[in-house]
Amino acid sequence: MHRLLTTSAQAGQVLRSARRKKGLSQAEAAARLGLSQSRISELEKDASAITLSQLLAMAALYGLEFELSLESPRSAASDEAAW
Image (cartoon, rainbow, N blue to C red; front, side, top):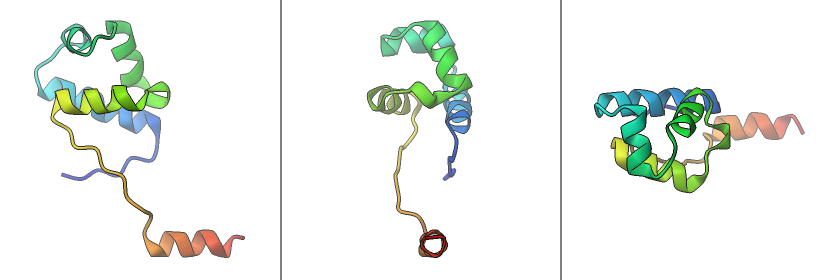
């Protein structure tokens, strides 16, 4: 399933959901990732301060695939029209 994320809060929700589906508590995930439980909690509320290495490590642990893509041509065209 693909999910388009546009906010850091959405990213945090996806991370929380994926951790729970793996059956991991925040403390268990934190121990495996070398982070504190409070850091996991913060990132699940709002992932705005997540580092790329943390995001990739969490994705690997939780079985998530991280993908970046270009905006659709339609979105890019409307952005250019605004200039």
